[in-house]
Image 1 (cartoon, rainbow, N blue to C red):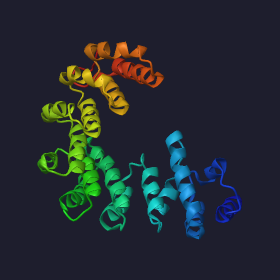
Image 2: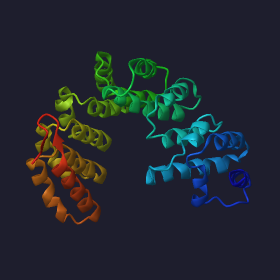
Image 3: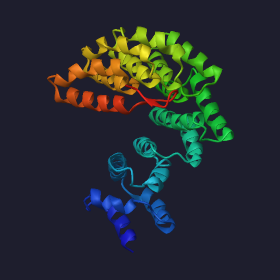
Image 4: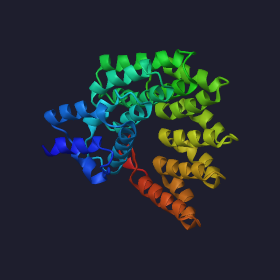
Length: 307
C-alpha cells in the first residue's frame, strides 16, 4: 500500500516532488512495476519530465540505484523530452533486451532528438561486440540499423552523425569507408563525428589525420581530435599534444590534459607536471587526475606499467 500511496502522490501536483521520495522507484518488484506502468500515463506531463530528469541525475550520482523499469516504460512516453531522458537513464544498461526498443526509436520515432539519442546509445552494444560480449546475431541488428541511418541522406544530419559515432568501434570495412566519406565531405557535423569515430575505432591509421586536426580553427574539431588521440593511446601523439595544453579554448585544453593521462608514459607526465602550478584550480585538478591515470595506465602489449 505504501508504494501505491506514493504513486498517488506523484499524480497529485500539490504533492512536492522530493529526491528521497523518488527512491521508492528503485529496483521495483514485478507487482510494483505493473502498478507503476499503469499509473505513469496518468501523471501530468511536466511532472513526468521532472521525475525522469531527476532520476537521470540520481543514477549519474549513484550507480547502485536501479530505475530501469521506469526508464523502459518512459521510452514509450508520448513526450520526446521524456523519451530522451529515458534513453539517457539507461546509460549503463548492457542487457540485449534494450536493443529492440532502441532500434524502434532510431527507425520510427518522429522526433530527431530521440532518434539521435537512440543512435548514440546503440554505440554501447557496438563496443560490447568488439569486446566479444555480444552475440553476433544481436550485433547484426545493431549494425544494420545504424548503417541504414548513416546511409539515409533524407535523415537529419545530427541523427546520421550520432549513428556514425556509435558504429565507430566496429572493424567492418564499410565503417572505415563511412568515416572517410564523412570526413572528406562538406557537412561539418558529419566531419566532426568522423573524428569522434576515428577515436572509437582504435585504428592507428587515423593518427596523421587527427594530428593535422589539432591545428583546425574550429575548437570543436580540435576537441574531437584530442579526445580521439587519447582513445588511440599512441605515444607518437604526445609531442603533438604539447601545444594543445595551452589552447585558448579551456575545454580543448582540459581534453588535451585528459588525453595525455590516457596515453601515459614519462614524456606525457613531463608535459603535464608544469601545469600543476596553473592559476586555475580546475586545471590543477585535471592535471592531478591525469597524472594519476598515467601512473596506473597499463600497456596491454607488455602488461607493464607505463613509466
